[in-house]
Image 1 (cartoon, rainbow, N blue to C red):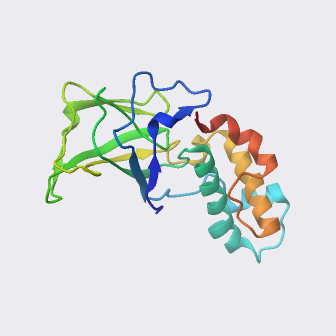
Image 2: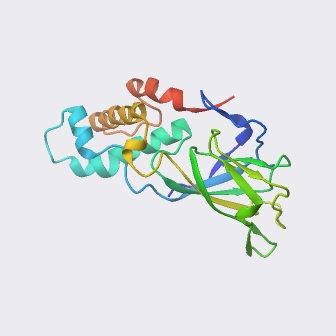
Image 3: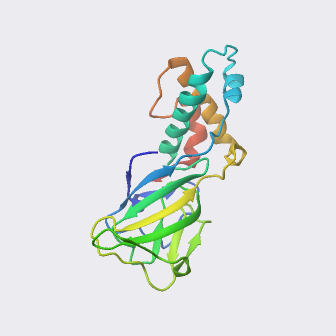
Length: 214
């Protein structure tokens, strides 16, 4: 799981993506967290060892359980994207007046639920017949049909749970991203330090997929 991350949707635009015309951020922004981690990593231990020409086995556990996840998390943070399918919980103060809500950490796959909280914190499901999904835009958008959900709370009173990523299999992740992860993991192995920013040889592959602040 990751801690809640503040996300100002109006500051974000997909580099080279389709964008989200007419979609607006929630008033006051929002905060999201990963509530179900990916079931696997985009690259395997053996792929990393082949790429980095590592023959020894004594570092296998560290590569598989620490270095690969560190590279994947770093890449997701750098790009503002989800790679392997994960579940995200997104808390917002209010629904945008436009009726269109942009979701962070694309690509969006599906929305599991939208709940509103009353003053006591009790949740009420906002039925899926009230909205439809635009999964072709990037980031993805939830579009309210006629009315928007309301909450009695002034802070984080609407909760959206959704899945995001390039599906559940490593093969669904773009090859350029997977190659960058191999290079990033190999660099972590060499230095034994998890870099916050992509190493130079991974940067060019990841940059076109980055959700940019403008």
